[in-house]
Length: 254
Image (tube, rainbow, N blue to C red; front, top):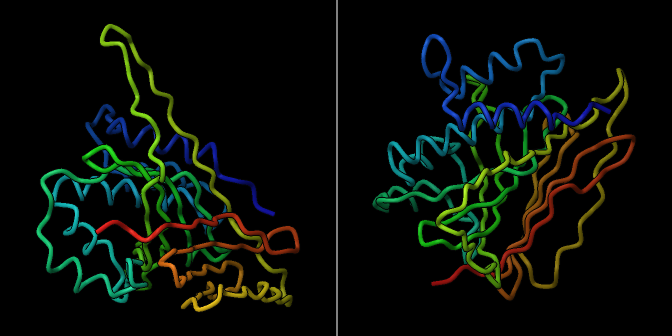
């Protein structure tokens, strides 16, 4: 089993969010990830997804929320809305970028052994202050090795947590969130990874799934009759399948 890349991901996020200024001036998230992982022993690096998420958010701030979503989307990307997953490009191409973007941060990233497929999950905050959770699937683009998102689902907390009240005279130091990064075990030479366990969908639910080319990671979505949206990510580790990411979201508000 490969080690979790939690420490490396924490360093990367801290440096990137601080603009990573050095003697030669600011560096981009891509510069940081390349330098930090240049000597890493594994082809699959969850830190690359963390860097991609940061690049994505910076692009949203600079170019607009929906413009960035299109720029970072795979050609067949889908967003899971109130009626199920729908093609993302027709949806976001018809919308005008909002003045203020959503802020988000991944908390968990799981990746296939071959590095071709990853699932991230984390927290977000809307400009109005509403907070919630997201799940995003990332696929490596064979043309340029960049990761593009292919599935996205998100939902607000219900109920919302109470607003944070801070004394105006207080000095607040916010710690950098630790991100858990996990990589699936690579099959031994000549060995075959067993198929993941079958998921029985809820009654009346539409559903779908996809596995990485090497068969070490599987993600699954479900749209239930009551409008609940469900997503999960499983990976192969220590000779068995483990569910790491599992989230349910109520039908989004009008």
